[in-house]
Image (cartoon, rainbow over all chains, first blue to last red; front, side, top):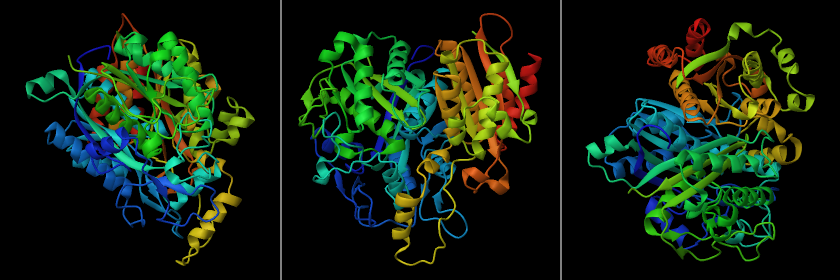
Length: 385
Length: 222
């Protein structure tokens, strides 16, 4: 980041279709194991989509309580435990609330956005909280905003990330009516196939992830172990459409350029791009164009992969989950693959690390998240020198 | 770099016919994507930017803050607790409802639509929350200005009446206020005073709109 103190990542937590911890999730993702299943927790009726990514143990029924809150609190506690902190200054918790069938009282709301943010903040002992509502870019916005607060001296420590559990009839049918989810006739495990010519939509999923961010000075003073440095954040608006990606890739390209500027890095310094890679026709081609534009010739040798090929699209949580997995990649020197990429789309002509993980040492990773509402966000993490 | 106020727009400036105000800025196509809840912030953003544009729209950062967090449409049919309710819901959503209804109820909709109209391409986010969230938006805006990520930052707070809080977006009219900030090498820095005022009411869990209304007079004087 380009002013003030460095921002260290000192805690990570995740709950995903891959498991109830960062380690379980990383194990599934790095092995290229798909976590997508047929939806059993409710009947999909005439919806042409029938698959989703659900957290293990929660596949068979929909409880009365909020799954988003359950996942969020669990992931937040993991991150706090890993950081060795009892409390943070602030919590920034992206989410979209949780809904069921509307009732005669007027709303089927199980939990509101602020209620979820407030409870996660309590779990982190945070004195204040907010909830970015940025669709699929929301938790990347959380992480970037937390870094800005630390950089500008408004906070020393922050819990940042997001949680969402939208595999419910209301949201599932709504996304289905927008024709944005995969309807392809294939085994559930193969439905999410980013950058493949057969891709036809995303696979809805659920989960949560949080990072503990801390000023370097504060972390050093208490002897905390740095897991990574948050080096750059780029946030841009497409100003194009509510949910269609810009065909020229401008918003995503602007976000990546801004993250590089913020990190003071040349594009050639990036060793891996963790793509938004939704498995929709438009996103994957738009993101490819944007990566080519930003990275130029370096794009020919730059590994790019999508974790959504294993765990699906976790909506407001995806930016944080993919930030956690990017940091796991950085620390382990293993780039997780893009699963189900058997027939590359000629419009998607990058090195997507198909099918099998790759061992490569690198120093900087860029993670992309783009969301309904025109939000484009890019985060850059680096090793602690 | 010192943070200075470029322009303000108070909630009192919003007319009873706020949709009429929005029509002055938005095309019919955009109007189709706006519900009552989005009119207030849309009008406040467009007004405060046009009052003192300072820079081209592509260099503008936009942060909106609200306690309203999006809701769902009205109950599509009477519920009776029977097992086929979800089947009816699926039929309603998949076959009868207009899909754009789901998009209009998103609480970042105003930010998105006004960005399309004005061409704002800078840093942007919608925060659900109260005065604390407003303070975070102001901090993010100031950071963007000081680091060169934006040349002008608009911070907007909006809210709906308590009685409308659980209404669908088309029956939740909102009120909004806005401030635009810029950075300069010289002149007074208003940021410490802005934070002082917002932080003072954040502990009382005041709304973002109430907190922003408190700071607007400071901005005008600067």
